[in-house]
Image (tube, rainbow, N blue to C red):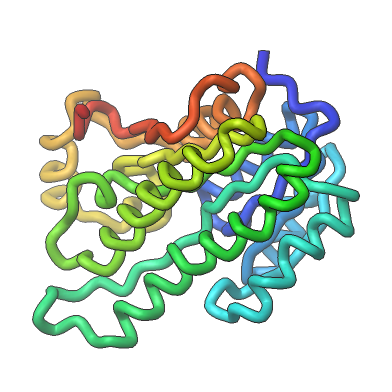
Length: 245
């Protein structure tokens, strides 16, 4: 159903849990995939686990000069680009009154400004071929907010609003722009939670479990495929019922 044969994708943050599974899912569906991230050894390991065609393009999204070269490098490697997954993100948590300017600026730079520049960069080739899929991995925090994460929440909310605005501009060119807002996803970070912390999280989730990176990847695959061609400007909430909107 989700056939991506002949499609070319760039995935940022591919060395992390969600990005890792997204890259594998896209490749398994037939896409050629550029793997981007900061941990080269992780990217090489991921590439070795993928049977399809991959390219490793390391990039630090806090370096805007490097960001501006990432899409041209991906286009050169794959002779074009059809799918952009803005997955990379970071946190610098602090309560609002103690949040440092650097904590705010760096999170906004990596999570939102880099996504803006990458999305802008793919528009010309996508508009020329009259086809494209741009997907931003946001967060339930970007929809509901969260104490101690004003910078992260603002960046993820900005990603959703930016996607909706861009979707209106490019829909007539057969380019869709959507967001995915995961809730609590099982990861190395959640593995470190104590029983009290885990119970507090579970009490907020009607499904009574954490989500998995593979479930986020499956949602991404749907939005990257032709099956979702009439869906744009949408935010797909993958949160086990934690936030129902």
